[in-house]
Image (cartoon, rainbow, N blue to C red):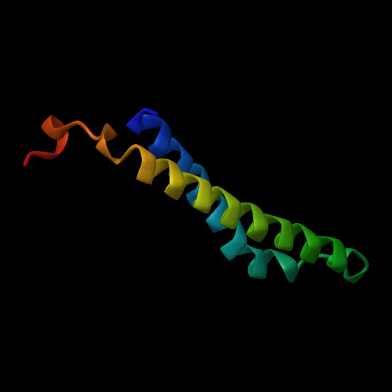
Amino acid sequence: MRFTHLVKQYGKIHKLGNKIIKHKKYINKVPKSKIDLEFQKQDDRIQKFVKLTNQANAQWKKNSTSVNEYWTGY
C-alpha cells in the first residue's frame, strides 16, 4: 500500500470526524419529527468513523515503511 493512499484514508476520517462534531449545531435546526432519524445517522457516522480508523491504523502498521526516507530525513 502506498503512503499517499494511507494519507487519503486519514483525510476521509478527518472529514467524517468534522461531520460528527458539527452534528450538535445541526441537530438544533432539525424538526422534532425527524430528530430520531438524525440521531440514527449520527450513530452510523460514529460507527463508520471507528471502523475506518481501525482499518487505517491496521494498514499503517502493515506498511509503516512506505514513507520514503528522503521525505523525512533520518
